[in-house]
Structures are given as C-alpha cells and as structure tokens.
Length: 336
Image 1 (spheres, one colour):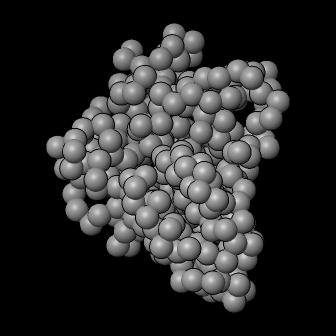
Image 2: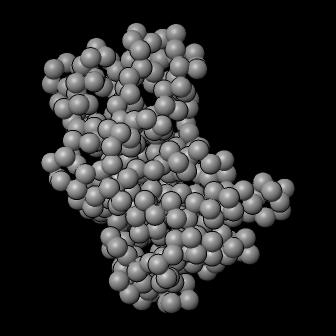
C-alpha cells in the first residue's frame, strides 16, 4: 500500500503540468506583483505546454516572452524582485542554468545577505530537468547539486502533481530565490489534486514518506520516486517491506525525517537520477552517517546514482544511464 496521507480526500486527477499551471495562475490572481517571464511562454504556451492559456488571461504585461538569453532573463528577474515584484522565470531546459549562474549564484542568492536583510529576492526559477526524452547530452542533465551548493538558494524537486502544485505555491510566496526543478517525464503523469478553490500549500523543507515499510529505507526524489515505489511493490510480493521517502526539497532538507526512517529500518539506499559523483546523494548519506541513526544501521548506506557519462542520444543507452527498476531492486536486495 502507498501511503499519501495528505491526499486522502481528493478525487480530481490532473497532470503534473496542469498542476504547475494552476499554481502559477492562482498565485497571479492572488497577487498582482507576480510576473512570469521566459522563452516562448506566452503565445506558444511554453516548451512543455505548462503555460498554455496564461497569456490570454493575464496579458503581455505580466506574461513576458523574452529573448533567448538565460543570463538576461535571470538578471531581469533578480532586479525586478529587489524592487518589489515577485517574478517566476522559466528556463526552457535546466541545462541552461549554466548560462544564468552568474546572476543566480552571485546576485540573486547573495543580495539579501550582502544588504543585511534590507533587500530580498522573492523569485522562482522553474527549470525542466532530467533525461528520458531523447534530447541528448546538452538538454538532459540533472544539475540540482550545483544549485543546492549555493548558500541563499532554495531547491525543490516535486514528484507528483499534488506536490508540484503545493510546493510551487509555497515557492512563489517565499521571500528568497527558489530553484524549482521539474523532471520532464513527469509532466504528463496524472495524480489527485484538490479543487482550485482549496488553497493548499506544502511547506518547503518537509519530506514525505510515500510508502511506509520496516525492512529497508529508500531515500529519493523527482522521477525516481514512482520508479522506487514500483520496485517496492514488486519486492513486497517476496516479503520485503520497503519504506520510500521523498525528500521533495533539497534545500531546506528535512533531515529529521531521514534520520527517523533510517533508525526505524536499519538499512538505507539513496537513489537519484543525477550522476553519482558529486551528486546530492552524498549529502543524504552524510546526513544519516553524521547522526544518531548511524548506531541503528545493520548495513552500510548504499548510493545508486546515474552513470558518470553525458546523457546519450540513443534511447537504449539513455535508459541505462540512470537507475533502472532492475538496478534499484538489485541494490535493495544486496542491502538485505
């Protein structure tokens, strides 16, 4: 059984992309200081269709199609945020955060600190990330560890439509810059989301136990969450009870949830799509190793990340670069 206590009373199902659009539209109706800017987000409706219909509702003074310059888009958003607006930026592919890093890491992330709290930078940078669409090495990376390494940035990666909407609304209301990464293969996935009149939010920094178990813990996020849940269900047929923890927010990180789960099961596997070397999984492992949970472990903590290679264009090779269900199951069984 999958435990999703926050979603018990909902019946409506929409896609991950629709949930994001609802979150932005509802927040823009609530606060006229929110603007939305990015490449092809207006007339075209976004590279992945997330912003369809928003230009017609909010007009071209609040839905701003920009030139193809991620550096300029992000710099404009940071400046606008410091002067009282609350920008949402869409970077067409998260790979292009590389072009925006100066404004994101050296300006947006640091201004509040450098001005002693006199200025804030309430902006959200949305970025589709991850592989699986045949977009090859320059459009398929998972770079969340890069931005999580920058003090002053919050980093969020939702795995379900429910989480996507609730977390995006919280990110938009936050007075700090938030990098909001949406893994591309999740856009068409459907799930229960409350009706638009239900103004729910999910606080940043709160993990979610997507499946409770007693034998081993899997700590993961993004599109690896549904993959790990499938493996957990398969292993349950063999009497192996897997707990799946979705961290949802990398920064801030709900460390206590991870520690509690590790103490409960005594065995931990960390799974993420990004390259294993230097990946955020290392931070998750150290969170448990540096805590009292270490003394409850019955086996060393294992990490399962993507291979340390550029994402191939060939679909067969691309599928093998990230943790597959077979690799996840094998890693779990080795822990037991």
